[in-house]
Image 1 (cartoon, helix red, strand yellow):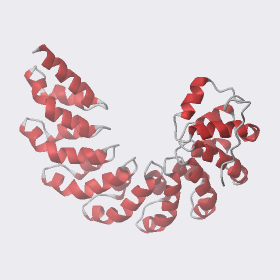
Image 2 (cartoon, one colour):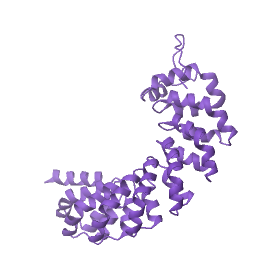
Image 3 (cartoon, helix red, strand yellow):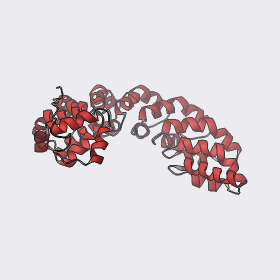
Image 4 (cartoon, one colour):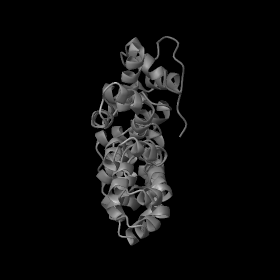
Length: 311
């Protein structure tokens, strides 16, 4: 349904909602932000019947928010009739692509219920960027995954992330090969259940055999891959692992560094700046403890720069 928009010359957009200049700016900086402010001004009475001021702000602070707000007006009654709470509507709509996600819940929700998914499951899947595609992917790939002994809970866990649709498709594509390579269904779910899960599964399929040949166990590989940026971390081990081992780091050390969000960057930082830190008296154990933290790459670079400045 098209977004209704009538310019009101006598009232600044957002004035009826008492938006501060900062709040207006927060909305305007998004794609379609001016349209969102105009829509709020024009549809103030209808919006405030179903949404609080905080709800409207939350939805409006995303790209294409006018369409999302219109979708709330279009579908709110249907959602209530199907047992969804207002909080569910806000969760689904408060993401990029919220309008499409709401429509997808209306279209696919009944079928998903028939397949055994609860309202809470549907909200969890839809409440992400790309939620509409993820709901459709559950319908498309769910039966195949069930036949392969993945539970409904597994499917929701995989689908309920940014990029969930791609992750489900990747499980269908790479799952059989990974199982033949010795990974369990639980391993595959763990790897897939992250933003970037599809890329992580592909990276395991691509680099897993090389890493196993170098002495890394599948448990280590699944553990590393099951983090945000897991695909990059596995590739970083393939690239930098041999050199780090030559410098006295053990595989356990490398896994410890890689097994974090930002693990790839941390490994690269140790590879590039480790020698300088060693020359300054830091032991490998010190460097590993420093690197095995989220955001460690920046800290290592900063420390190396400080040491360089003293020379």
